[in-house]
Image 1 (cartoon, rainbow, N blue to C red):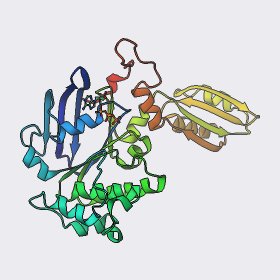
Image 2 (spheres, protein in one colour):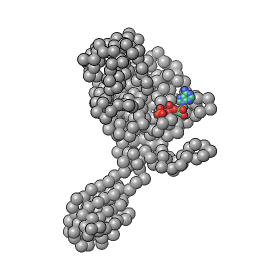
Image 3 (cartoon, protein in one colour):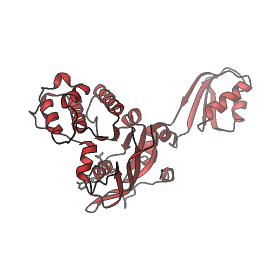
Image 4 (cartoon, rainbow, N blue to C red):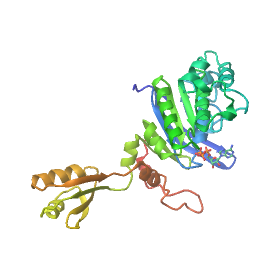
Length: 324
Ligand SMILES: Nc1ncnc2c1ncn2[C@@H]1O[C@H](COP(=O)(O)OP(=O)(O)OP(=O)(O)O)[C@@H](O)[C@H]1O
């Protein structure tokens, strides 16, 4: 992956009347990345991508997509950015082939619509009417329509909402294949698992602001939850060893004469295993429970904290973790 920025957003702000939908969003997407915009309902995700796709005018801030300003260069942007809309309803009787050919006709240099349908696993559904497609097939068609202009960037919004788990996984495979064709992908989602499985990096948005940016693993590591190490050992002297390990915040055990639970920072496994081994103590059934992306989401969006009654906003004690 090279470090060429394809999308650069700085201090984006957008209101609808008195509703401040996006207060301050900055983000960067590099070529070849799958970047997820993750956040709870109403966080401002769709508004953000609509501003950078040129579908809405921003109030202020700077947006650059492949050297274009979406507010000024709409026509040029349409040729390089494909947008899958949140609810891309097509006429019930249009066939997949007709839809793909129609959308291809909007572009100067479109992909071959039939080849694209084949690539997205719709070869045998080309002549099926839209109303006869399954939920997963409709989503794959809407991805095809977002890609038919041969864009360099695709924006996929709530890609798998309403799909069953298998159709969701199939759709993720399709997105990976699209990336492998060289398309940079910006994905809007409120599904933790989707962000975790699919995205190289995540921009976590809450109440119109970016609250954290990083890989799924980096965000998970930011969760306030401690790492918990569990193991079993029949040997005496374990407690004395644990008490002497600097990275250990606390421990319980032995339960049942065997089981220990040790709490500590990210290095806790290594520190404890080295100390036990140095003391000649054997440990069995070693398990580590890490903070998950879900922990990070709840902590960073403050969903574990009540909203302020006056402002509707939640406490943001972790805002300092936000990447500029
Ligand atoms: N066209 C509009 N007119 C007025 N308010 C709007 C409009 N679109 C969105 N909003 C409001 O702006 C805020 C952000 O909405 P937005 O759709 O960008 O959030 P989102 O994170 O995409 O949410 P969701 O996951 O529910 O789609 C919400 O309070 C929403 O009600």
